[in-house]
Length: 452
Image (cartoon, rainbow, N blue to C red; front, side):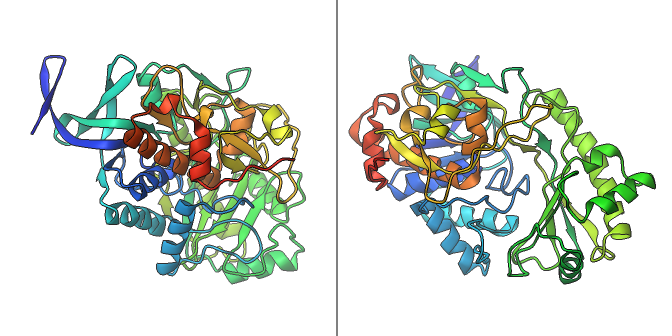
């Protein structure tokens, strides 16, 4: 086995690949599939032991709705989920539903079948550069330190970890330095979902408009007229809940998992920065306390939850926003409002600017009509500093507000597919990723030019 000298130590080079994907989450898995579909030798370096990232480890399901045409990688994933008897279409909304275990398995299958390699339980420690080019990742594994060599690299770490190690400038948070709200999701089993649904409908709850009872959503936000608010207030009066438990409550059924719901809460109070290792650790402790209050409260107060119990806590926090690279183009909320088009627009977004704020700031909601969208330029994925690095995920080059729109899973997958295709074009044609004309990738993706 070849080795690499690193501070006086000879590290084994575990893989040599055309494309090295740092992070196997929503973006990383999709980028790897796209790269493999293009015939590149591809390896994914993943810190956990499952693919899917926020989707699977943070239990973030379903995918929020988009009316954009489904990309090839997205179609591959949805088709494979259907083979696992997972129904993704609720028949009413444009959400894409899944359960976390099935999705993680499907992503792994799609990569393995195409000859890709996955290095699990591997944390990125550093990168080696020669001039403006990354040559190796330094990783920590069960064997100790090791290296992975690559021709192109995709930063799909969500926290822009590889980009920051490579010296790429980054931004974080809003003008006051505050990041979006952290959630700590969990699942409960033993729920009588039909009884819960019937109860809420009998009380006139209009929140869930999906006719298919297999796809059910509940929510409680104070002051929004939700039926459940009075029950939460009663729990607060009785001392079973604290005021912080009423900030945000939401849950979704899990296709293929009868009697199970995934909870998009609690929102962790008092954590204004998601880029601090200490604060993230405190968020876990605080969130776990809140989860256990909620899972004791629900069986005692809400019909349908009488026999329910906590079955799973997320193994990863729900981080909506942390670092963002400063790329060749910074996508802004102005681009959102004007429904921007770009010659190198490699993906389209139509989700609203969805800020889960930790402060009292209010963001005016400007929502598109069906069929309206903005484009994400290829230049928001690349930087001036590193020639063979491309970003894919929530950390691409954008402002705080714009990131709140483009961060949803289907958009992230589309961006990732473009990154994988770009790596293939770069390797085959000897063109640096940060010098590649993104209009070529747009054309290869089949995204037609449209004028408003």
